[in-house]
Amino acid sequence: MAKSIILKEFESLQCKNDSKDNYIEKTTFETIERFVLENETMQYLKITTKKGYGKVLQAQNYVGVIQTKDGTTIEILPKVQEVICYP
Image (cartoon, rainbow, N blue to C red; front, side, top):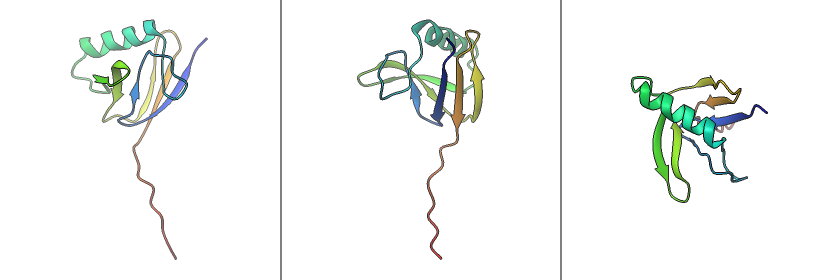
């Protein structure tokens, strides 16, 4: 079954199944990781580590949609701070 994930720019994605965070299947994670390593000039995602999760993929400097061959869709939204306007 295809999975849809929404991230904000600079949030991370991992293959550990934790209901509080965004995760993908291990095979999908490895496929994306391989793509990132083979295409270092495309810096949509960065491989890094996160305490308690190990290796993660962090969205950076990209806003848009990434779709994998297995149908997983990752939508990356801009990191926008909330602005409150008073009359």
